[in-house]
Image (cartoon, rainbow, N blue to C red; front, side, top):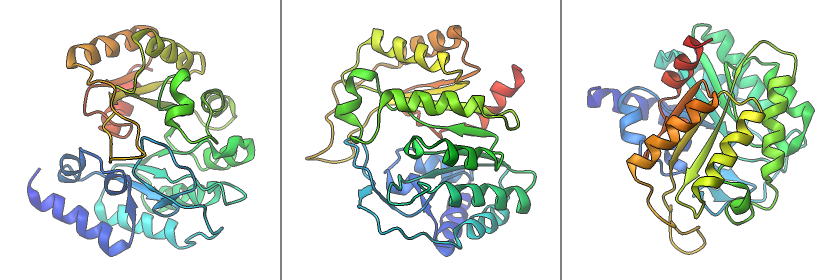
Length: 279
């Protein structure tokens, strides 16, 4: 894509006062994705009530406030953008009674109304494990529901905030498939290079399949800063990523992206469509 596309995306995001995980999480794929005319919009602010050791998003205990105009701004921006596929993610908002699910649901509905040809993928926190909050998001009809386990069971307490749990994440993903709303794909993501073993990665992939997860991404963890962030244990080779990707496909995942620069929303549209073609 020409550099003018990158500029258009940046200008639209800046003028709409929207946050992106591309910027806030210092994603290494920002230039590539924006040049393709895609970005991942981050809802509910740019500060998170959780403090995970892998993430550069600023920690903040929260003030119980939300931007009530955000859903409409997102829909207008995406319509101007002309996107056929959009990924919405969020900061954790444990300071809100509904964990932010209301804003997420309203944004999905606004997009479905303003941009009926646009498919919406949503990547949420665990929403505090609330079934009501999860159902609120799913009732808005996203095409893909995502929630990341991030790492293997053994490393969860080191890598993720103390409010998060490996088993809770699996329960959220399994519940997302069982709630009676229109069929949707579910998705999760793993970072590698945090100190996990190959057997632990395979065990995690098996756990995700038991939760009926359809799509999975595996990428290299890159330390976003200095003190306070989890160290990189090792850099996984492209060959290892390819092998793990093939093993994931053999387990029955409908869509797999595995590589050093892969992130949870990287090439999301292609992954979703590849999985749909297998149904």
